[in-house]
Length: 106
Length: 106
Image (cartoon, rainbow over all chains, first blue to last red; front, side):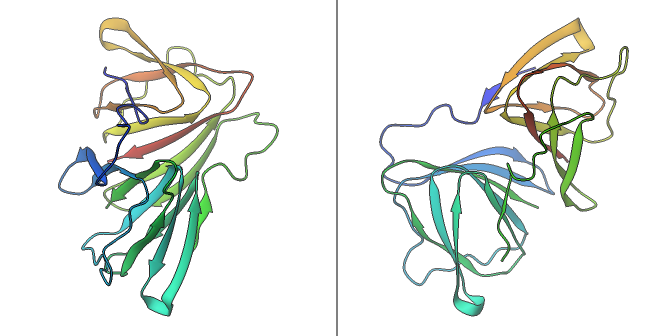
């Protein structure tokens, strides 16, 4: 059995967000995302077919939800369950440390 | 949107392992497991219908796999993907600190 570590292979420089697939089946996709000061493009909203459960393992981020113009701040250990088609964007991620996300689309 | 924290509500005493369901659909079950010195009963093997992806967020544990009598040690950030019906048991968890697992059955 192969053991991997979630915090391995984090490059020193992160010019673009890094998406790494951990599990991919017809029912679920699990991925690790590394951000560092990144945000969604202006006026961009994720509008996803599947639900997305997402947890921050390191760092911090701010998500924005179109409905009610809601802002949510996340730090390490925080998780949130975003229903399919619930429009959201990454408003901010910490520019000083990597923000490492675990996302499960299901 | 509700934010929860993965490390919240950890009781001081943990006489039995604590299983908390985070997501439950027909395709996946996600749960948090807290162990502290617990192990699977002697001669017991998990033999599961679904694949299980499991990561340790805190603490440390040893898993044993029936095939090849293999032993695997896991520490924080380590994860492993156990195929359905691949028989395994928890051989050991740290008796001094909580071991907190994230398990996704898919």
